[in-house]
Image (cartoon, rainbow, N blue to C red; front, side):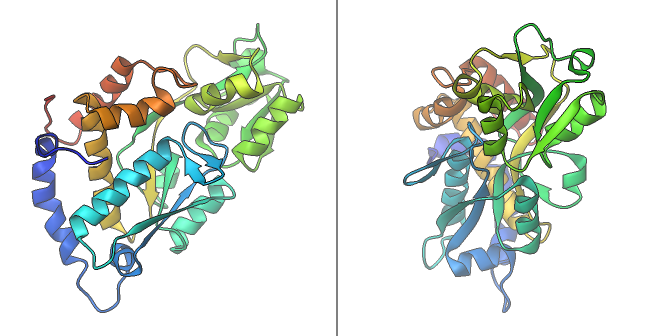
Length: 300
């Protein structure tokens, strides 16, 4: 998603401050972090399978909002670093949230996208700018409002290791929680009738509602909690976090400026006509809030 020169202008001061430091770090005898990515020529990325709208497996690879973001980050790396050979994006699916976090910490993978923020995780990994806002809610049978009282004694599915699972257990402790290792297994359990309640990220639940529980309702009206959703990198790779955040910022700026490529790429997964169905005004408002906290920007 290449941005025009005019749309890059609001981020020019970030590049002036940070890109020289990133480039300087690519000089050394023992490449690590982003230096190793440039030398290897591959950005090893993780997504979480069956985690629509963030990612989903296809015959040719992966697609979804997280993949759109990773494409933008890959482009940013090549444009900024100008490596001897183009850095290619290699995407794999993590077996679970904990597996993804472990592979990032160990250096087996460089970046993972579609990860909800938590202060506990922040101690283990670094986050880029968030590119989405998730809320902790549930798919529940019609007539159940999803409040702690209504969940008491009910069997509620959650994906192990997620922010939603932790939040629900803390705020609705009387429910009977059933953990699933992956989003795919949790969705399959809801579809089969093994569980009637499924807790998780609001966008994820909404994106999959029609396929697995069309008669269910998304509750409660006010989420149990909200958290930004972004990409994570190891503490030892701050340069990748910097360029990742710049790429996400450019993508959001493009959406705000009504750049066709950015608007189409985002709307495909969460905008009008998608399973999530957010309005462009709501998406732009969120992106404006995010950008206003980190940079001066203006709508073209």
